[in-house]
Image (tube, rainbow, N blue to C red):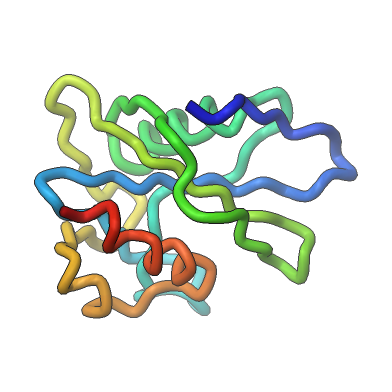
Length: 140
């Protein structure tokens, strides 16, 4: 398991975390509902790491808020992805659903479970594309 990482202070880059949730050889993709400039684009669920939270704590909180699920956060998937002209970074982790929890689209327009041959069937946000490139090895 990757070491826990904390947001250092207000001057450090903003950290955004996202979850790669794989079940039965399919990965969960979520369709953005807002803001308008990204509505209809697809992403991995997640959000901002708040001061005092580890990446893993933030991702567990975001999964509960956005999907209504409890999760166990595992290893990193792919490299850090620079965002906002270097003012932020996206970190993605493999995540396991706990005790039969089933994701619901609480903050997204819709969700889809995508197999390896369906990864290109949705219009991914640019930040998620480097992670999508890592998925074929994980979707067996």
